[in-house]
Amino acid sequence: MARLRILSGAEVLAILRGFGFAEFSQRGSHIKVRRLSGKQVQTLTVPNHREIDRGTLQAILRQASRFIPESELRSRFYAD
Image (cartoon, rainbow, N blue to C red; front, side, top):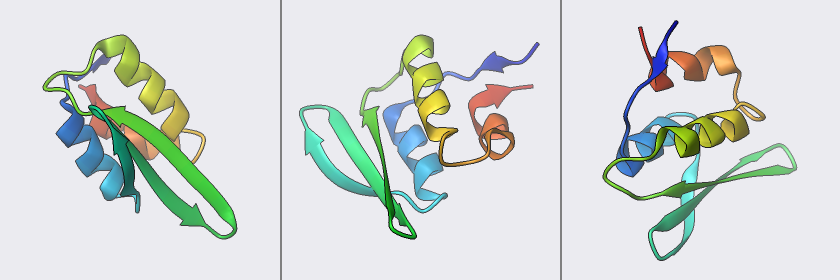
């Protein structure tokens, strides 16, 4: 079974930028990214930490899967 990779906040932000998300606002170490899809606004929050806990990373993946097909995200978040 594939395991979640250990990613930093910067790496997660780079992945999301590849799908059209852009930084919208920041409060402390948490960065909100947003993209427009038609008339729908899609927003995610990413902690800008050196290493994101696996549970938090799983939650970000689950939330991003609402907007992006999980098959496209899986290769970036999981190690083979």
